[in-house]
Length: 598
Image (cartoon, rainbow, N blue to C red; front, side):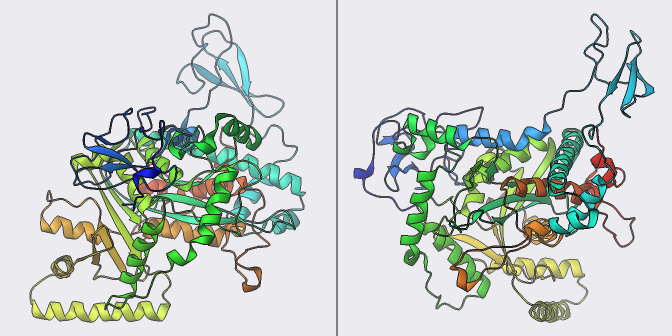
């Protein structure tokens, strides 16, 4: 996968060892699904050279690679501790919050939660308005505090929530509601806590849902933070990975690569004390976090290697989309770490508080998050944007399922920049071809014609890129995806031709693309910024946030609104929310239901 340097680059222990397994996570193994080493982990301790079916080689100074001696793949290694830490960050909201119980010593209900049927009865309200309950065993009464107990007035909470997810800029919310900036930011934090608590309580029910088959679309979206100092006009850019169910539109998670909890000075001091800078990245204590010296080095490499990433124009008669696919493969091969898709440069910087996480660690953790969130899934189908980092993340987290053939992965590449006229032209051309095939096959149904077209494209597939991935040009365009190419990453012979054709036909990023489009159109602080040629690539937007934590808060808030509140009108069916369509809710909820959720 990666072009390696000579053995003179190799180093002594620990760079000639594989990162140890941690919390049942072992990322480091061959990621080739058709290789016998797929999922087979190498020993954790060995010296330089060949070790059974693996070897250690180097792709640069202090950059060890795990070489598979069976298929020749050389995947970069990652810290299992870092993956576990990032996964724990993503699933933290699913931990059940402690519930109020009877506090009387020796009472049978002392450790019984308040929601337990028959253990407590409603007993009016306290002076503060908090609900009171009486223990049915010892008769003691107690109250449960309201979520908004520290707020003087609460009548603006629902309005702030509603305006926030409907494109109202923060400055206009302050003006329209007549509140101060401090009150607005306090209420945004409050709404965020309520949304996270609401989603955590509802999504714990996924463990009990029997989801026979899921078609999950996964993609990422970049968000830019405004600079806060006039003398340093570099932007902070986060990459948020999201996954959505293509059938219901339910968004399972949207995770920017930012952790607000670690303190910069403590982590940097600990890294200096441990000598992390002299260690290869997989063995560093804080391998998942961008440290200052790493970011500066990466920005320098990015600037000095621009000429290496320029892709020559293809002379072969390839379509525009095929050229973009080929270009993506070449750009990936030019990187030192093929799984890293972040590009620090002279116009970007790290956040001044909290830590930016290496985006590939967030990507890997996102797949582990999905396995943790969704319990009873019979068959997984993943449709992912073309990116080598997302490929490795999927294959590492779902290796057992891929081996059992209950999980399949597909790349999907879409021409997203077409105009309406270009989309209509493509639709018309495809319709003409469909009619011609139908005329030549009288009596065939539309379903059978689609199957014929898909099989014809499967037969015409050709490999693209250095990994010889075979891509299908989808013959049935839609307005949202007028030109689409699909690659089956976990290809095998266990399915008949018809099933394979329909798997390709289901390939789509529609659900996650719709969510990303709604984010841009509905959240004023996260709308797409405009670059100016006079700014040398720097970006500043009057609506963009200055606090990096605000990106994650707004995305969490909007995900709840998208899944549980926003109603979609379907032809021939009653209006429903994404949560209703996936089986997680019986009816839409209101803004008040979330804001005052206990």
